[in-house]
Length: 189
Image 1 (spheres, helix red, strand yellow):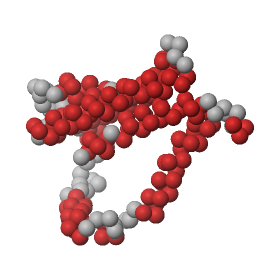
Image 2 (image 1 turned 120 degrees about the vertical axis):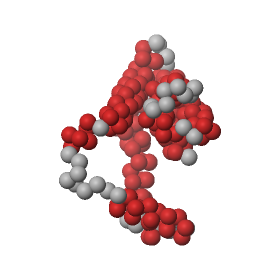
Image 3 (image 1 turned 60 degrees about the vertical axis):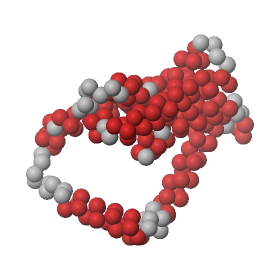
Image 4 (image 1 turned 90 degrees about the vertical axis):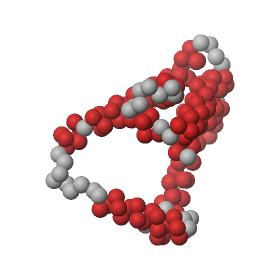
């Protein structure tokens, strides 16, 4: 189920790529440049959703109207257990946290994903346009890698569910997994 949540990023890029060219072609409409229309229209869903969620989300599970009583009870117990298991501030120093191999591993993975992802998101349309593609086709062509990656993410999640290797894949602790190479390529995309 978590993989469906993570599909939001490639789907957002696919959708954004497909609508960006038409929005850029609105240059001059209403006295605004195409890039201004792009920022306004692509920001509207996030702004509207942010306002909606500000009023919709509650502070405590007991107040959530979309959860049934069993879910509220489970979430309350889980949050209370997590709060009870929190380390006291004096137990860990900042240097100890940054020296933890798990923190280093996850930081490197996060850096690598963002470094590759942002570079691709920002420069792929320019690279495609440099091949002589028309502006109307640039967004469609730039969306292809993200469309493929979203399919790959679902396949990887399905394979991990079958073999129950979620934690090992995320932390890279199971180097001999037959799906590890595919999973790492999928993260890169």
